[in-house]
Image (cartoon, rainbow, N blue to C red; front, side, top):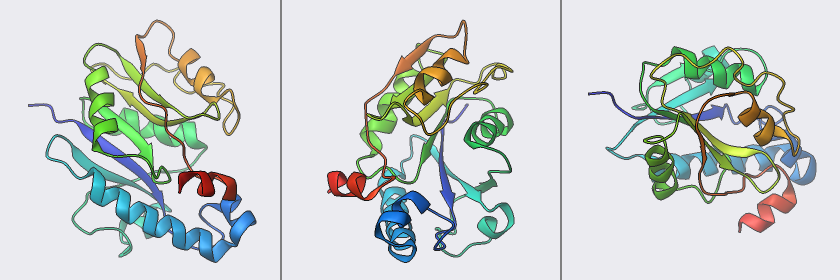
Length: 194
């Protein structure tokens, strides 16, 4: 049986290496602390027998052996490149079957949102979870066939065009939109999440 896979992208929570935009607002140490505890709670909420939970870690070597994240969860390296390079690599290299990728900085994310996204993949080739800023908190694909070579090509990351550019990079595929959720990039995002 092909198993659903939920990948959570995480970075080592070191000051100045993670959540730097948030760190510019509240300080690098508090931003790293927030991320570490946010991800810990998120992983507890997302563990579910309906899917395999996998950590995509960065930096590759340090993250694979880190004691910060739960030791029972499998880990794969994110590798080099921009966000599209790293997500595309995950979508190409994981075993066939439905996969959803999320970030660790989405306070409102829980099992219900993930289950809905996987359900949408039942009738679509890809799914995105929109964010209010024009980006997205989730990307998923059925992965019966390899993702197209155009995947994430030309995406203007960290802009209001990221979601539409990503959808446009999948010509001819049936794309669904899941729930809208917010991530935390700045102090104002953090305040809204509370």
